[in-house]
Image 1: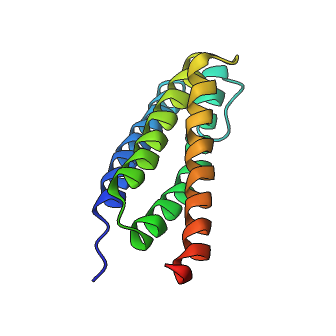
Image 2: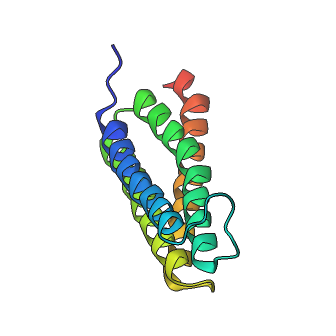
Image 3: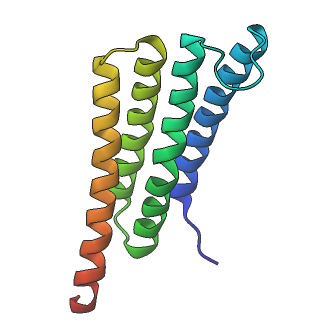
Length: 134
């Protein structure tokens, strides 16, 4: 049995964040009686983008995190990428929820998210290439 405690930890935290973001969309829809689409509501448009953006980046990044955890025994590196992803997603969601413009939270959040994605992809490729030589 393969056990991935670090990935499970970050996936669980991210799942709770996703549930919170989903609840924000649902609550706003219900309170404004918007069943389908966004009804031209700017707040709902931002909430839907927060939800969508989260759903676009988190699954692939978590998959790469799990692959890295299976491939190496460097827990600090896995925690570094996992924590960066969580912090990045929280910052981005906060910044996008509260402003349509480029805020420092959105910029920092996307930078952390993209650095996590790039770092994990690079680490996995490096391990695949170098593992036969170790």
